[in-house]
Length: 97
Image 1 (cartoon, rainbow, N blue to C red):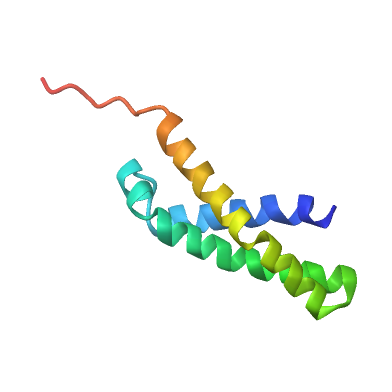
Image 2: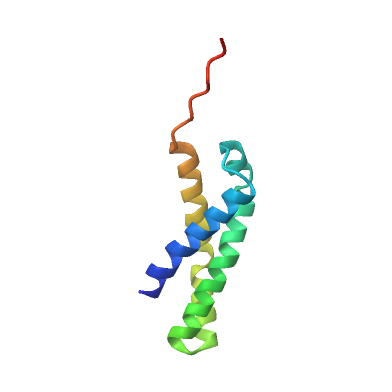
């Protein structure tokens, strides 16, 4: 339940901060995919660890949650980013007179 509430917030906050700092041009998005994935994964690891400690009260169990989710969340984030870059509508370029 906690993850359902915190993960969308983290994703939105990360995307908003990234777009404000770097921009949203498609070529920038694809060229920066590794860095975007690493920054999101680092934030998400912190979210998972804190949530795990709060729910279980155990640091080893929380670390296990992090290990279990680390690669899967990074891969799903990167796949989502690539899908948006591929399927997003291409903005129309203005014609020259």
